[in-house]
Image (cartoon, rainbow, N blue to C red; front, side, top):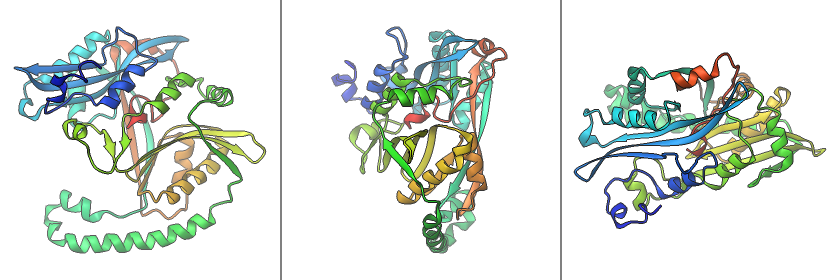
Length: 357
């Protein structure tokens, strides 16, 4: 933090990490004093690129194995094409003994990782994304430039379609089954919740415990702020968003029995479910709860990867404008994959840094 508090950092036109993200990295319970969290490249005093690494552990063959998530990669546009990204990646691999995992990478970054020969596919999880609102005027002209003259008409069509489906959504919301549930938004993980989560983690590669979850709750990477501040204008990744809400929910039935623990993130109208712990038989019940919140918050989009919730969303007759099958790919270094052997495992959508963003 000394560097972030320095005059040098304050005067940089581009910064390699935000203050809120730096604090979160320092508080990471899986990080040790020896871990490298940020790798920067400079040329003649100019920041030419940076890569963040998020230390973590996974469980394989009853062993706790240290690893690092490649968390962000940025190269100064004026220095692209000079191999800086590859230098940063090589440094991260060296610092973590080639025990590295990554996900949510861009197409360009994916080309770098695959071409390096250092990574192998770990797992690809399937999800579904549904849309409540139409945005043809924002999407089609960018993909098909010949439609730009029609943008005013597309905008009107968007408003009409969204309005019509909004009426259908309001009717459907009233028809959702009555939820005899007690919802508790938590900031601390109780022994009951911790025990509940543990029951679902036998095959989880990353087994989030009380300490890790409370770190995630207490130290986000994004804050809700309508207008971008000075720091966010110098940092390539997100520091603040007009809408950024995170909810950690214990779901009890009317008898007081815990039925689920779920994490919901609403960022600028996009509702995501990075973590969910529930029994398959309760997936319809919990999806109805998620749809209730989606209507309450008037979100544009819902994305779900949890296997049971995803299937219930796919089968749902709720009036969505559009449904889209999506996937999320995880890569792992060959050395780290060898440690897995034939261990059966699962991951959740929030693993890595996804729960923070």
